Image (cartoon, rainbow, N blue to C red):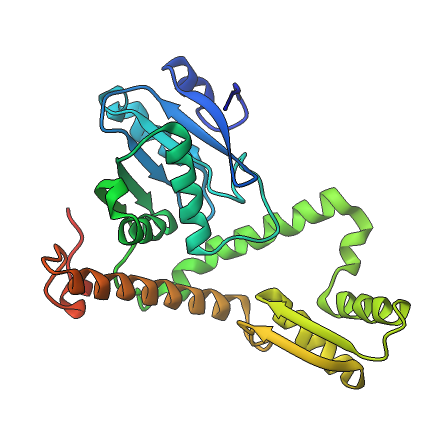
Length: 282
């Protein structure tokens, strides 16, 4: 593990003055950044939301969570100062990162808190690794899907799309104008020809399914075999894709509730529907 000071994130200076450390640990080849605020036991591990980072909990830490409790807040993979691998963003892989972090720190059991997407990761961890979780805190992660989720997500999605585009232009300049899916599919056909292959065998997952479908549409006679795992409908807008993902979160939550009910004495209710209707703690 490595200590590293940082004055780039919001409230970094105040947190460091209060004794919070910036640290890094490697978990299965991914370098994970986390904040470590001193305090008592049991420690609380706090998981941030989809587009946030560990510093989103600065206010709570500053208001007294530390030093009452030791606070450990990692940047999830792909966020903040943690590595950003090209793949590996499933719920299971996020959970494995957290378990790897606990193992590296020698923590057998912790209080686990998650906000928004981090709440879903926390619920998944509690379901799959109950022996590691002493208590579970879920903040702003609904058991049931808000019917206005599309409308509510749109401002954040628009902001992320704008920031992503601006970052691409800043880092890649004019190349940014030539990275469409159609152009990537044409690059694939150039590679096929360069290898001397008359037809292409292709396996695509996630965005790779969209790329594969585009390639097949452009070059139907150049496809021998094609497997699309988790195909994305190319006609869907970003908002529709996000809504589908949100529904996937609800499916995962209901699967957790089913498992909880099967285990018996589920604190959320005697049935899945009862658990789904449970009001959040005030």
